[in-house]
Structures are given as C-alpha cells and as structure tokens.
Amino acid sequence: MQKKKQIIIIGGGTSISEGRAKGLWDKIKGKFIIGLNYSFNYLPNPTFQCFVDNTFYNEVYSKIGYLPLIIGSKKKVEKELPNTIFLPAISKYYKDIKHGVYKNSLVGLYALTLAIYLANPGDEIYLLGMDYGEKRKSDFTKVLKKPAELNKVMIRDEKNRAMTHFYQGEINHRGIGKINYYNGKNRVEQDYKWYKQIKDIKIYNVSLVSKIPEDIFPKISYDEFFKKLDKDTYNQDELRTEIRRKLKWAI
Image (cartoon, rainbow, N blue to C red; front, side, top):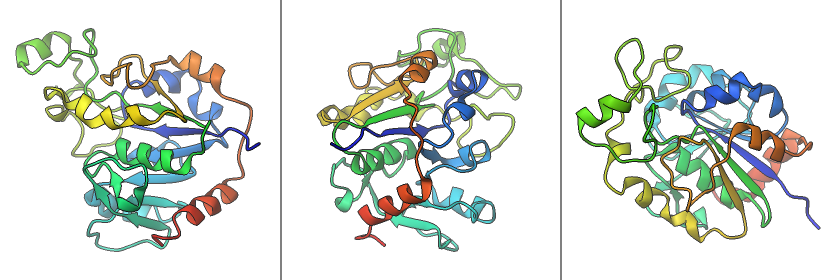
C-alpha cells in the first residue's frame, strides 16, 4: 500500500504570519512544498515554485535561476529558464490538467489544481495563506463592497493600503493592497466550487480568517496543522523526478 503524502502550498495571505511566529519554516523542512510567487524569498528550497503571472516571472528572472524546479503558466516571457515547466492555464477546472491548468488568473488555484493532479487517493493537501483578500478585524467571510463597510473592518498598512500579504512592507509588487476582485459577489464560490468534486484527497485550509467557505475546505488553525503533520520528510530530488515523469507529456 502506497504511503500517504502531505502536500503543502505556501500562499501569500497575512494569516501565514501566525505560522511564522510559531516556527512554520522549521516545522515544514523537507516536506512536499509548493511555493507561490514571492514565497521563495522566505522558503528558498520548495519542492517546486509556482506562478501564473508572466510579469512576475520576468521581474524575478535573475533571482530564481537557482531553484530546482518552477512550474508556471504558459504565457509569453522574455526568457525561459531551463528549470521551468510551462503549462497552459485555463478558466475552467479539469482534474486531468492535459486540458490546461485551472486557474489562469490566480496562482493559488493553479497550484492547488497541480497538487490534486500530482496527488494519489488518500493524500492530504494543506493550503497556507489562502485568505482570499484583505486582513480584517472581524466579519472575515462577508462580501463587503461598500468602502464604508470595508473601512470599519479592514486593516491597513503604514502606506494606507489594505493588508493582503504576509510580506507586505518587505517586498513590493503590484498585487499588494488590491482587493476588488476578492470582494466580488459570489466570486469565491465561483472560483472554488469545482473542488467540491474532489472526494479522494483531503484538502485543509490553514487559515481561520479565509473567505473560502468551510463547506468547500475545512478550516484549521496552525496548532491543528502542526499536529496533523506526520514525521516524514522527502527526498526532494526523487519528488521532482516523479513530478517531471507525471508531466512528461508537457516537457
């Protein structure tokens, strides 16, 4: 019987700050980790790094050449690094990613779709920093479009921008403080409803303040997450070889 794998996806949401304060990076060393966007600045050796924004790839091109494996959206880039597998991104979910990887505009969904494809029945996937929007004092899951409503609950940084990323103030990029998309009516349900069909893989959202509904993924705290982590670590080269084997049709 094949042993259960645990796959960890590192997003950018502010809830990761709690994990960092509790020793997150040390606790997940050697695990199967998918890093998103700028997370490589904090966790420099993930199993693979993921992106969908070609602007991001072009901007950090000179900084990510050392990474053993990058997987990202097949959009026009200025230069292609030999460590990168480019896969087409689409707007509809298919479990078989040979149709394309969902979703073409959100790297967290793109990475989750990849993780499900790479997982086996019985495996577990943990979503970290998938807050789906701004940090709030309260009303975490409500859709609030009116500025007056948001101003009552939203936490801002020293530049008066919405707090959206755990590394805000340390790294600057065009996604910081942008929240209109995430507060669209029924937006989160439309983005995540596809994953309700996944029954053979357990997916946990390690963010109690995430806007992603609990009827899609159960929410757990970092303390619960650390308890659920098994003691296994992985040979990263072997993991990457297996990933490349599963994606050989695209290479």
